[in-house]
Length: 72
Image (tube, rainbow, N blue to C red):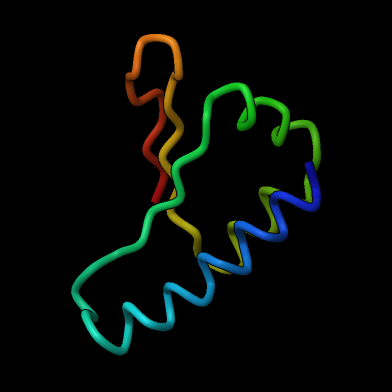
């Protein structure tokens, strides 16, 4: 899971730079399945990284296709 997180974090950081340059009024949001988010809560690395890099997240439930958490 760490590899996937690093990959997603790298992508979102690159996209954030692009959006800041081309459309500064827009915000990028990382959507995370609820099960993955719950696994991430057991490791401080994930939360610390998202806080440090100001990553906005949306946690969703795959089964009922609903938003569980919207964190800015």
